[in-house]
Length: 216
Image (cartoon, rainbow, N blue to C red; front, side, top):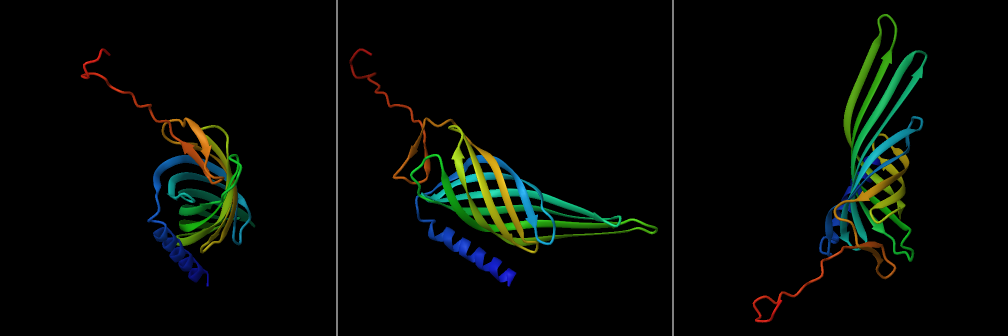
């Protein structure tokens, strides 16, 4: 059942991307940021997770593409035995940016596929001791959303909640900061109460009268 949901989510993600491919897009590395928060893996206690997020621009005026690199590790000890599980994940997410009236608050919801590199290890002391480990690569589906708030013309703060369907289901609540790449913006603008837009500065056109027979 879980695999069927993941496959269905991947199909819907690809369908949504293809349906919006005709729209005017503005793709590229727009922002780069980091996040940290609580990750609650299935059948294990909560732990701290870290991540790096990249904003890949807009597929359409309301659809933002992003990618996320995440890491968490959980270790437990019981009766002298140590067990640990680790996940390094790479996700591609498409988020719908809600239309709001305030330029200081941008909520969104999103979904997308993820690839998880799991590694588990168990060590039992004694004579003789015993050790076992296993690694696997699994597909997942990320579902969630959050909100972002501007801190400065180049920096945004954001908070997010994501639920991941995979071999080890995960719930994550994180906060982070992202920074706009490229040259500084000249101004912020909001168009029609929609998502926050960045208005780039463009040099003013100057007329060149050389060769016109008039003194310069």
